Image 1 (tube, rainbow, N blue to C red):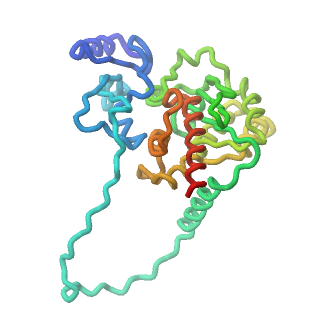
Image 2 (image 1 turned 120 degrees about the horizontal axis):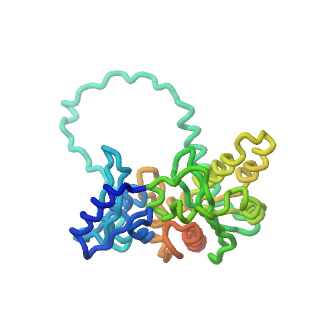
Image 3 (image 1 turned 180 degrees about the vertical axis):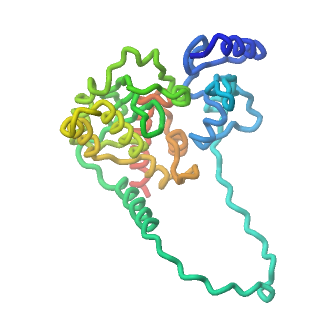
Length: 318
């Protein structure tokens, strides 16, 4: 919660820019920001985008934890339409400083010790990317989650499942056992007020399981979403014994999934240092109009479905 002193300071600073909208992910006393209005830092770090030259902030959002090194304050924000994709620059070739005749003789290289771990990682990564292109059997569904954060304790706060047309088959908020991190709330707009009366994971787990088991589940970042589903189930099964844990978690790990992110990075090219691509950038590259609200589980799942269809058509034609 913001202290009265912090709120008074924020209100005084807001008065300096009265004609520009001001937002707070906590929703009080300022409204929550639209899902497609983010800070320049967010666009760069998470989406591989930046404000276009000459663009002025369309809004200000509250940022910071209130600590000495990260004080709470207003930060300029930009609409998605004001941003452009960051293109990675290729390093310029270095000029030759020495002629062949003048180049010193290199010493005899030492024998390299082979690191099998790197080779194993490369093989697993190649295998994972090949699996994304494997034929899909049976019914295909698309899933997305929003979460409390990114770390090993984070949990799901929203989940949605859609079919190949983008129609929502299941959608629900999920009340976590850990707080929502401010950075996460700023992205998806889900705070404590919206989660107060939401069902817990055990209350909806069987519905999710019934919808997904026996299907091929396409997820934009499948490794992340499956890990978060596992962490959420584990948090509720803690202390209940091995059988309860297996019943709560095992079916999640046995789902047949495909990762749309890896496939999109292969088709349209990676746009970040991780060798992957964000859903926003993949949709833009594919010419797919975003379905619903950005960073809502249903909107992201429906956009993933549309992106998957376009990639199917692209690879069929090529």
